[in-house]
Length: 164
Image 1 (spheres, rainbow, N blue to C red):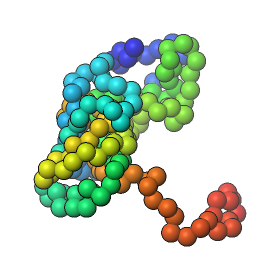
Image 2: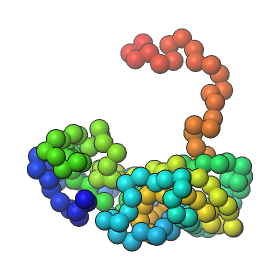
Image 3: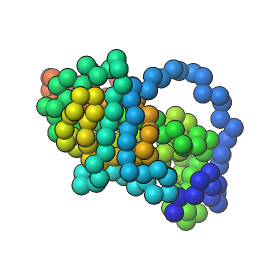
């Protein structure tokens, strides 16, 4: 069970620096049925409840053509997440892993992602299924699901070599 700001056995928190390195613009809000982190699912489901992604002006024209895609990658700011854990015990069983080895919302930059099923568009609002964030979560970006795309050219020798 999730508990707000809990430090579990063997977890390590640090004094995080002030978040001043970059500027982000919230381009909208996500509306979901969940108002508490304790009730919010850990992962969205394609058969989950209907959610609304609201895009603010002047970004609404950027939605043109989105109807052509079955799934959308939605990036959002986990505004209620803590940002200071470097080691975490996700199962609360005493084992720990580094934050970057987990899909936890507790991260230095709490950016969440969901692959949502597109249902419909009404002006600046998209109806989707598959979200896992709180009602009112700030929207950072959205794009067609990357698994729908094929590379332009086949891989070439050396494309994936490290240090080569």
